[in-house]
Image (cartoon, rainbow, N blue to C red; front, top):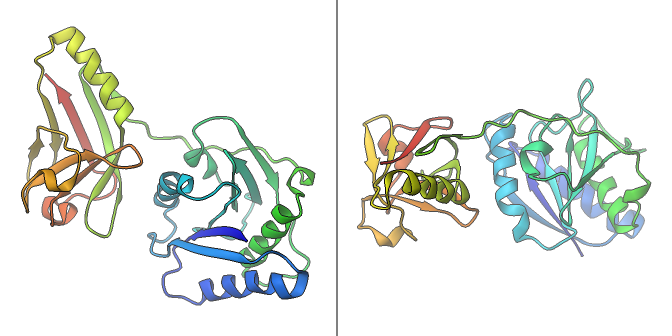
Length: 266
């Protein structure tokens, strides 16, 4: 059975049933393997490629090797952005080549191929490309596809000094928890450098604008603080997350995607 994930901004539209139908037809029409389709999210903000890529980057490793991940935000090829199938760390990724893969892949050990337009398709081509990708993977034909170059977005990385990190909120989940682009690795490296320069008894402040808020500690889980209290932790994907235990952080603090977050060691 082929595991396939889909993330999109389709909401409750008819696009997902069309995709499911197209993938299901593979079994009866061409004897392709059964597909286990997992929906990561259908509520990505419209056309928000950055949020889509953050979710995929944070979740793809939870799935078995050889999983096909369908990147359904801005799913149709346009102008010079062709449909491509990428292979990275044992996983396949299908989406147009508009730079999105550079937001997911951290290293250069990837392979990207052009996906030919299927013989049968409609004006909504993505389900047909998805079905074609399943066929390519199941028949071991990936290496026979034409190579494609990687287009790149300019990644917005946190600004780091010897005692501070300035990052941004990049995702807000359905509970109002705010996930930043600040990683545990960045945090530990900067804290170590600050301790070497200013002494081991340094204090840490996470500064959030809005109703100006400071958090002075990193906890391991939500229940390390009382109900209704603010907290900061590194989530399972290794990113700094700001939350309120049993509350909605984004709503309470008036923050949104791209709100600046500053960490200072002093």
